Image (cartoon, rainbow over all chains, first blue to last red; front, side, top):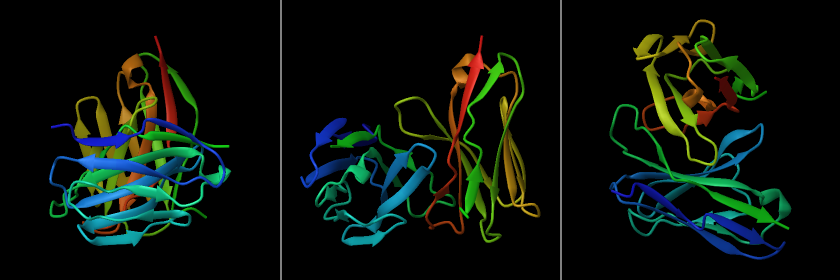
Length: 114
Length: 111
């Protein structure tokens, strides 16, 4: 199993550009989430999904879109990049039915917006 | 006020020391408490999980939850340089709920 994979590992964008961060998991997990991690802020939830076709907003959703057409994939779209979106982005997945549904994290995407 | 507060450190200790990492929280509805470890430039990985109050031990690691004080702790005994990482506490209200993370504490264990 590859677990949770994310591409790209690094990305530099100019203000106003759009891009998609890719996330895939091969564990047949129902739940998938996107977080951003900034110094001193911990991990903040951007969007999450409890199954194919179902998504919802987290704590910091503005400027991001998601969709979940398959169980395996959960891409995150930046519509018009801003310097405030410079961050490290983590995708995570978990079972929906376990008692505590441990989240498995990907290796992260480091994004810089100039 | 953040729902979950964690001192970001950094915390530096000598090898072999006992390390105490702590988080406080404001909402008494939290029931599931976790500690994640994150090595530099890696994704977090689950280290310890506790449901409700009490202690849980796993090797050199002990997790404690005191719901009356809204306080959770992670103790590391006989700390090793390989324990150098950022430790994040996380909690949630129910089994299917969203995880709320603390800011993370950066720990360095010096040989």
